[in-house]
Length: 79
Picture 1 (spheres, one colour):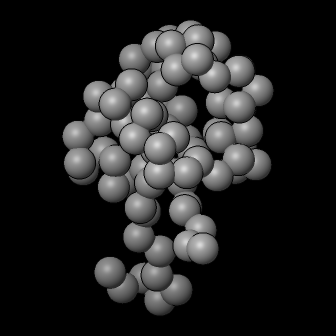
Picture 2 (cartoon, rainbow, N blue to C red):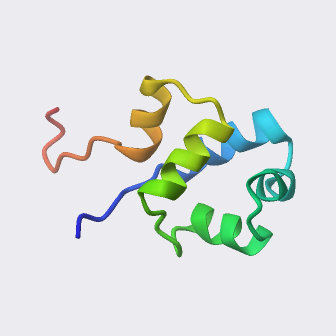
């Protein structure tokens, strides 16, 4: 399967700006705080359903979504 790369710091910023705490975000989603913590430390890779849930909860636009979930990585700096 394709590994999803997540820009954790940007996602954390979105969560804090909207929910103030990771725990409030977890409660809103019906997730455990531990699941959110693992998501933000890269120990848990969300599936497509989880990504949709996160995106909807944070009311993300497409640009923000792409910046967080599809960061462009290039070994030589080209895009």
